[in-house]
Length: 215
Image 1 (cartoon, rainbow, N blue to C red):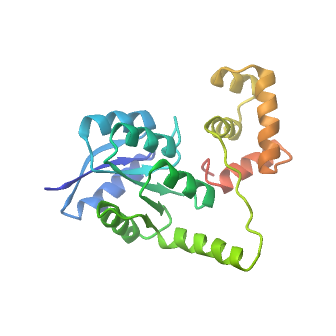
Image 2: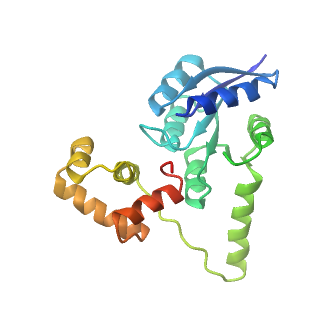
């Protein structure tokens, strides 16, 4: 019996490419594709996949939120995060949400294949690049070297950051988030302080550098 897999990514060409690669493994069937968290949850409930390969950054919610929603509805489903974000904070959040694997989009295709095999065997899988970063942080800790802490952003902060990066004005952001302009201004100020940005331009550069928005 083939393993049923759901692909979640908002880039159609990437999904199609992954589907072709995964199809080469005769034991896996791609039963559905989704581009948003809402679509992912709906298809997960409809198709009952054994495994979901989930992008971290989706148009409506984060992949971590979508993964958590799917796991609440179908706890037996395995989730592999497939992300361009290598930061320790995102990796920790994904694992805390219940993901069983974390693979970077810059990794070789074989890493995703290995991740699928490992998580379906009940193991936790981190790609070599992800593991190397964690081991490096651990080694620095043993040597007493400071490991820079990555700020953890709330879902609303990430939404705000996406809207700022899209060039939205405070009034437009307020309308989209259902907040007052003063509230947006206050949240924007707190966010800039939190990530160490002195201007909107620096805030956008931070979002790109951390993989929260595309360059």
